[in-house]
Image 1 (cartoon, rainbow, N blue to C red):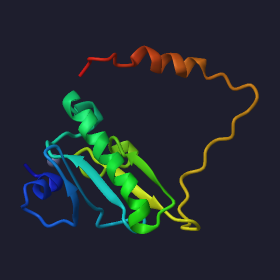
Image 2 (image 1 turned 60 degrees about the horizontal axis):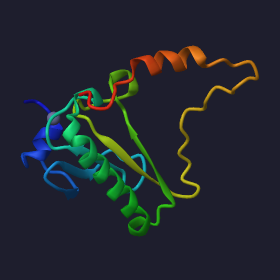
Image 3 (image 1 turned 135 degrees about the vertical axis):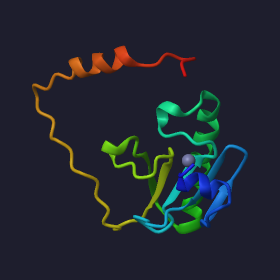
Image 4 (image 1 turned 90 degrees about the vertical axis):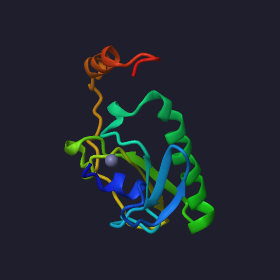
Length: 141
Ligand SMILES: [Zn+2]
């Protein structure tokens, strides 16, 4: 296994671990976008959201929430961004699913890519229907 996050989970590589439980580990990103930038991941190797076993959905989200709630009182963050770079095209660098919890501070200057402006005639029904038709139903996975 040549996965750097699995090696951290196994204790074979050092990391600034903040929290861990039976299913998840959270540590500081060594290339932080902001102070306190956290990565939260399942102990079990999963490449992407598609690979995440159903039994780990709730424990992983609970860990993400717990950490997101801690950074305000801990660091004075006014909020946070929570995101997953799911797939190489989305910027995923390490092939082990991980949530980013990015503390945000007033005036921190972080700006995400600007969005396309909506126009009056936009019709999103086609893309909406494509996504609806592809949705996994409860119990899938
Ligand atoms: Zn891994």
